[in-house]
Image (tube, rainbow, N blue to C red):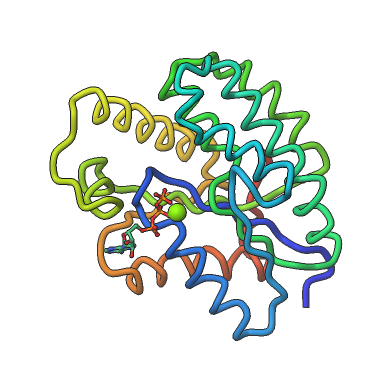
Length: 213
Ligand SMILES: Nc1ncnc2c1ncn2[C@@H]1O[C@H](COP(=O)(O)OP(=O)(O)OP(=O)(O)O)[C@@H](O)[C@H]1O
Ligand SMILES: [Mg+2]
């Protein structure tokens, strides 16, 4: 159905509904006969999943932000080469639950690492990828956290971190409107899916070009 596949990433704060929308989008695509690969970050290959374990391990709580940025980039490099590029070459639609914008939003805007540094290392990671589409699900940080974990109170530091990450995502959407589609993630999963689907369809049918990172 597609000569060359297409990559669509899903981004946003924890609990905003990314995994739910990836699943609903994959189901709809499969019903329409598109070959689909669903993957996630960090992870999606044996090496990248091993790096994920390192990133999540509480034993490494004091990990330096630069080390963290390189580990994410390393896991991503392997995912791109081993999973995403071959799937695109095979004409698949690749749905990625978090991708490079997470590094800019979390390591850059959240932790305060230099944005040029992050863009530089990730430019090597994304070589050969070309244009893609990014669905950015946006929700006020307190609401996202409630969805995600059922918590109703936030420690102040956690909230200001999430607010910085959200601002980072919103900046990315402003800077790259062809690629990053900002969607208010309020309403039911089905209501959000309707908005997501319009962008997905326009991208797959060639009416919306997407963009490079
Ligand atoms: N539109 C929605 N309205 C209400 N609840 C939702 C909505 N979308 C998802 N949820 C629920 O909110 C929770 C978080 O959703 P989901 O796991 O899809 O978010 P996520 O962005 O993937 O989170 P994480 O970053 O933690 O992986 C789940 O319990 C899910 O069922
Ligand atoms: Mg998820």
